[in-house]
Image 1 (cartoon, rainbow, N blue to C red):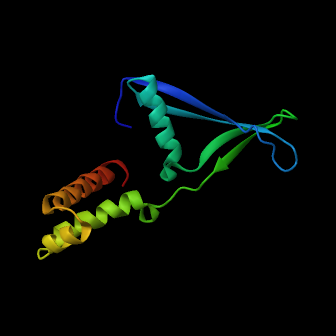
Image 2 (cartoon, rainbow, N blue to C red):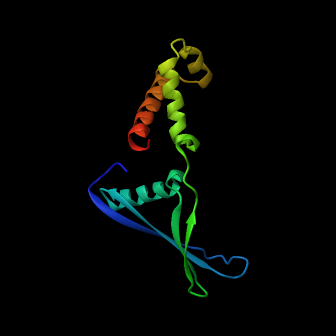
Image 3 (tube, rainbow, N blue to C red):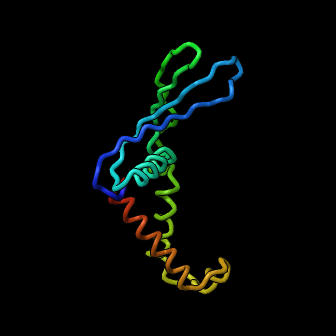
Length: 138
């Protein structure tokens, strides 16, 4: 996470009003700790973390409303860096720029319906993303 003023635990509670097949309703909660500068930013960071497959598995507390039975359920599996698009795509683009001296930027820009400057900007952004991945993930 980027901001860093206060540590905020953001519990997420999702209740399913529809009954599942056997008539049991569940309350599901997860606690996500983030560092943020505001409640809104903390909520956004928590949502981002829940969407980030690289953070799996995520532990959920699941309560059956009818019985009160509570159990912990882990969802998802951790992905290796090779399996993560957010790691490999910026790496691929950064390596293309680093190794392809004869890349036809004009043809690439035309095929993407972009200007050469916009394509260059994409490669620059990919390079920055790859540097961030190397610093934070690998």
